[in-house]
Image 1: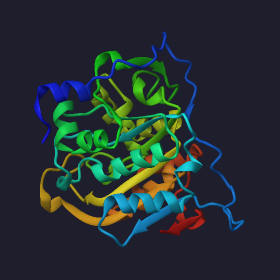
Image 2 (image 1 turned 90 degrees about the vertical axis):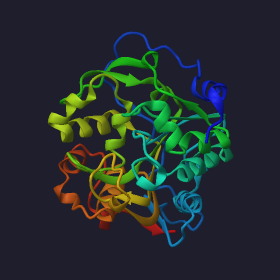
Image 3 (image 1 turned 30 degrees about the horizontal axis):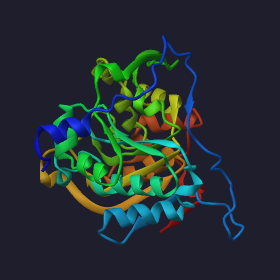
Length: 310
């Protein structure tokens, strides 16, 4: 448990952050590095996706997956400010599999620092009350313990930007993520009652302020719009314990199951297609994945993705 209101205040609020002036221009926020067909020491192209399994240690799984993808040094440079975006949306314990596993988040933070990051921010715009989400998920404590700057959402941390999407045009966007040098997406694989599956692409809903529940009327297009707007440096999918039904917030232990996997990828569509199967969903039935593929955000054809088992 966290100890006292002083600790809460000291950990929660960070006064930094550049001020974004006025409206944006609708340009893509692209945080990718040259992580395409780079060669490994063997002379072979580096993988696009790495799947780590066969151990029950979430931190070890995470490290194995990222190392198999070429290591965090492939993505993070010395002096970078890195934003780590887990799913911290819900007032749930880790066992409920509604939020990203705190040990996976902590491992990503540690590897970013080891690669030379000057600062690592861990944050999300929660759906339930933010202090309780950050606290009960275990992500606050785990991230703080390894040196991350943990930021809670607040109104002044959003700025209206023009995304230029089919559904999402002018919208309040969470600045602590888009102001970083590099962005690492750390979602959890789970069921969603409207989109059927939530993982890498759906996790960008945590960038949105305002009445984002209005977007549920056209949820698939809005998810594709977000994927078009923000292209992360790296995606690390937590599938250590997944939510099979009654998502996205769950709450019943019978709805969750262990998969003991972490998947690291440069292709968010591919990682989501793989994640769908882990919760018993057919990726061909998840419409936003088809939309994302049509927009050249990645591929659902996993047989074409350079993949290694770590």
